[in-house]
Amino acid sequence: MNEQHYFLLKVLLAVLVLLVIAYQLTAPKKGSKPEKLSVTEPRWVRWVLIGVAMSFILLFLVLPLAAVFTEALRKGLEAYWQGLHEPDAWAAIKLTLLTAVIAVPLNLVFGVAAAWCIAKYEFKGKAFLTTLIDLPFSISPVVAGLMYVLVFGANGWMGAWLAEHDIKIIFAVPGIVLATVFVTFPFIARELIPLMQAQGNDEEQAAIVLGASGWQTFWYVTLPNIKWGLLYGVILCNARAMGEFGAVSVVSGHIRGQTNTIPLHVEILYNEYQSVAAFAAASLLALLALVTLVIKTYAEWKHEQQVQAAANMPPERPSH
Image (cartoon, rainbow, N blue to C red; front, side):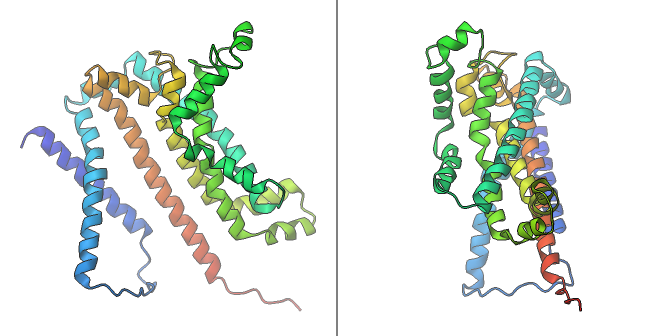
């Protein structure tokens, strides 16, 4: 076995260790009694299903992830850092971070407002608004990018007016931000809507009766109840914003050092047979995926702990 194979085994071992640590963090306590599940299948059927699932995860998730880091470090750390320190790579990293910094807060505000409106109120057009929120899930990102080109491009509906006022959206940073906002805005809203609907309006109405303002009700009552779901939605939104390729590819123009995000930079390097530099940039997105997975697992675990603690609290005694 050569050094590349040894490094691949090390990466696989590190991934397995992370999975074991994540399981230990989220596993039930020793004193707790696990719920009994009614299982009618024979033991060998369960083991076969578990083996198939684990084989699928190893073949289609763990191995490709390990291959990214293996190829990125194939020529050593020096070549890896050199690929990341190129001016075009730094420009792509900065643009990706800038896009995420703008798109995620915008979607945070929109997602909370839309979820609050849909979950807490009844009004005409509520079903239509919910359908509009799901629209980016049903439209190809490439089609979403083409829509912005048709509206803001040089030959688009607003192209002449934008050219007269020297405003550039397509093939510039504003177009990248708009496309990213479009493809990522359902994540936070879709995470919060079922959570808020399940919680109901009782606590908010009690706070209003006691004299709390709308902002106080949201800050001290609603937000603590949705904080872990909100964190989960922000994590997913940020991961999609930094890894978006299709819509950004259409509106960016692929101008090196100016309008290339990390995914577009990886594509260009790979097409130019610069595999080490391409996988070095791709490893940043892979690290983002791992960090997202860890934070997501922790957020889900904290949310479950909070729900269990609330369920185990003794009922309040009425005061005489």
